[in-house]
Every structure is written in C-alpha cells, then in structure tokens.
Length: 446
Image (cartoon, rainbow, N blue to C red; front, top):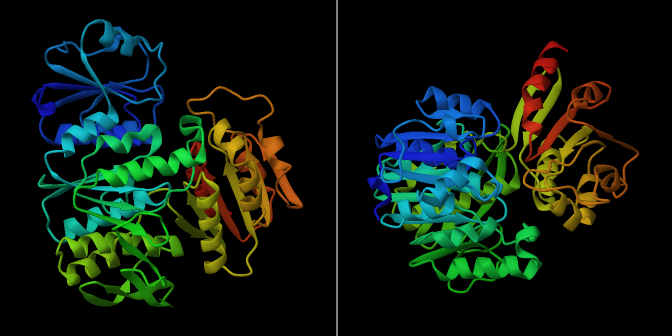
C-alpha cells in the first residue's frame, strides 16, 4: 500500500503537536483532512482555519460524509483510550488504521531521512536543522514536535527529497523510521511507565542507532560506537569553542572534520541550545551545506514556542518553557541564572504524569530547590489515572525552599500576583501554557 494513495486522512487526536504536522503535510499535497480531538485549542483553531475539519465530541455521527474504508486512512495516537467510539467504529468497519509513528515512517522511508532523537533537545535541534536546510534551499520537509517561530508552524515544507523527522522514544516510535542520518542528543531515562527499567530506555536508543544507515551524530560522552561526536568545549569531532557573549547572545567558533567555522552567532539563550545548534550544524556540514548558509540560518533562527520563550514588561522578566524532566528543569534554571545573576527567580511548575513524578521525585526535588520560590501546580495526568500517594503536596516536601506552595492551575495567576520576584519561570508539558497569555497581559498592565 502506498500511504499517499488515499483521498481522506482522518486523525483521532487531531490537536496533538505531532499529529497536526502530518495533517498539514497531507493538506499541502491536496488531500482531504479531518479529525477529532477532545479539546479545542489555539492550534486546533489554526488547523480549522487552514481547511482541516475538526470536531470535539467522540461521536461517529460527526465523521464527515464521503469517508469510507476504501478511500480513507485513519491515524491515531497511543494516548487514545481503547473504548473510544470513533476508533472502534473504524476498526470494526475494516478501515486502514495506523499509529502516527507508523505513518511518519511510511512517509519518510522513500526519502533521505534525518532522524533527530534524544530525551531532551530534539524539537529545537530538528527545528534548527530544518531551518538551515530551508535557508540553503535544500528540497526538504521537516516534521517538528513544536511550533518553529520562524514559520509559525510545526512543519517546514520545501520539497520531499530530504526529510527531517523528530524521532520520538515514547512507545519506541523512533524504531519505525528508516534514517540515513541521525542525531542523538541524550539518552536519559524517561517514559518509565512504558519501559519499566531505566536501562531499557538506553537499550532502545542503541536499537535506534543500529538502524541508522549512513552516519550517526551524538553528544560527546554518549555510548555509541562509530558516531561523529559534537559538544561545547568537549574536544568533540564538531566542537564549539571560544564561546563569548556579545550583545546578550552567544558567539562561538566550531571545529569540524572539514575545517572551522568562526564567529557563529545564535539568538537562543542557554548552554543547551548552543549544543543543539552545534548538532544541527554538524549534520548540515556533513551534507555539504555551504558554511555561509549555515551561519546565516543559525543567526536568524528565532526559536520554538514554549522553549525558553522570553517576555519583558515593567521591569519584570517572564520565561516560559516546556521542561518536564529534571534534566530539562536543570537546563532551564541554569540558563536563567546565567542570564540574570543575582535576580530573585519564582518558578511555577506543573508536573506531567503521575508515573514520571513518582519515578523522578528525588531529582525533581533537587531541581526545584535551585529556585528562590516555587508555586507547584497539581499533577497533569494526560493519559494516566491517579496513583495513590503521588501528589503535588507529596512532591513539595522534597523541595528544599522556604517559599513554596501548592496551587491549582485556576488559582495560579492569583498566587503569582502575591509573590515578590524579578524573574518568573513557568515550566511544564501539560496545560500550563493556558496561563501564558494571562500572565503577559498582567505584567504589561502592572
């Protein structure tokens, strides 16, 4: 079966960030696209405006007419419950039904695919790489796990000879890809609800590395043989050095196996984003992208939504970030401390998943203790049911701060207004993003 031969593409979980990139892809090649999601969001509103038919009630009566088992491919995410009416309707009536990861694998397998994997940093790295290839006018489509600010989209469309795909370790999805090249930014443990043991996560990354056909690029220190390494001041194959800050931005040089690039400037804050930029640079250099195009792209890449987005008003600094793992929290807080030394930092953190909160409780406690004060929101369950004893009050006890409280999301803005801070940092992967706009409006008025 050629996955592109259908007329209709129906998405169950249409508002997901990875799903919507596929929706936009199919729409771009002239297909009819529709779907269901349980929640209306800013993203679903944009998708509807782009001509994608989305409804918000699990009701088979709302499935568009014209859809049948012969002309339609149904795509769903693992987060969809087994008793979902629409999903079961399609299964019972012999529709072709595939997971998102399977579809991404099918779309990209006939292209020169570059997979970007890692527990942290894959969205920013794949977005930077997609931007470099677009600036260099390489025929490439990039499927992203976040909204790239330069394009206000989670897909970069510029031909199909090459593809960049975020290679997600959740549910071992990345093993569906057929990458010619790949990046692994990190192999830290996560998704222990799926993997069980931390070593199983590392084993799955080794399995991913084994399917890379041509060349692998890894952060120096990761245990992958035969790969190019990259890093910052690590004496890696692709190594950033002579790092300085000019006008508030990083400028650095990079040593490569093919010579050097000097005076590279990036707009993104944070040491981890410098590493992400070097990873993307390494692949682009290997692919033969001219160095002047690489430098131009890096200097013009604005960032990804909810990846250390900064806002300043009335003397207050506000940063919003997607961090939901202790390593990511550490990176976000480190970046704040580097940029704003001596400032009082208030963190608002929404834990994501009961299992992740349980499995990394001690590490979360240590990470959050680096703040000056903390508002800890209720745990966002996503696909999970509560686990007895695993609550935000329980997690708060592991945080070594004098100024710390637990709050609901609904009360969070009122609680923020009571706090004294110079820098406000909101972090989490659930629905904490719904308070970003109200916070900005309040700070602008204050």
